Image 1: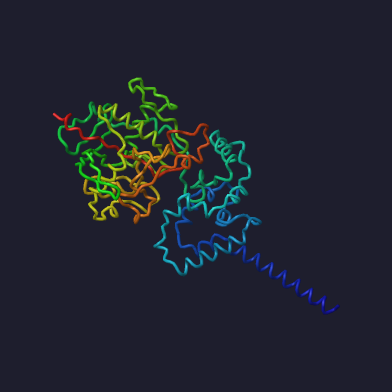
Image 2: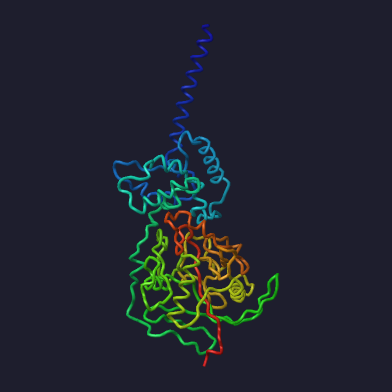
Length: 432
């Protein structure tokens, strides 16, 4: 009996010591300093310091790395901690951090695998606090109806790292600042060559590049493509905001001159994602909205602007690179956002960003509800880019976090890398 009691006592002491050591080890490996000692992406700490999870009121604690990037205890905490520890140890010692696509890892599609919804709800159990805004109530009610399909970071992507917000500023959309120069008439096309379109009653202009027609050879068949003009750049925010300022009004046209052209309803979230307006490509609009813009632009200029067909887009991009691989130099992939055209090299047609920056709507319907998009975006692997590359829109998926009933037909809440450019058919009989 004495030996058994001694054994049990020693076993108890060992268990207590092991538990004490495990707790100490868990606490030590849960510090931000420990996490940062192994992580090879230093910007993670810098962006965390900029976030509201660091800059908290005095009565609230600062969120640690493990508070967001591990599930709560009792929800697989130790299992995920061991997996994360081994993954980071292996990456630190055996991988080259310069080869990582950090841009891709910061997008929602990747980030949701490294942030735990249970952890968000542990710190924020009240989804409807007293000071919650009307939009916040609508969004959180929508979440309660679709818990299995949604993740908190779909709306709060920058809440843990960085200080950007998806809250929109309607005054920016409705109140465009116009300079003194105002065009009184649209451009006149006298010859088949590049021209600068000017939108009457505004300070907005853009270049249209001449694309001489020819035969597009594909695996399926040869197709004759007629000559056309194509936008030098994707439709910019300068151009799109002018359209919004003249037509926006809860989806109703308030400008009686623009007969039959309905304007966009206000966006859900920040349409430019906080990246800026100006010459950056306009994004987050739907295919329906892009078509409305083309109708508006046609009315303003007296021409017939439209979206390119997929074959016209492919034909232009083939002529733009002539199989030289130049699109690898003129596409901004592996970035975290769109860029302005001034920082990119033009292609052989003088066009910018046919590849990369944003995917571009085409006029072709892929099925009853979706449309073809071409060109790839800043999210697309540069090795995939080619004139033949294409995808289709994902209308339902791109409206996942939009809580409005009915959902917007004008703005996507969950797509930030699709825009469009316009083309104009060449009609020699109309040239004097």
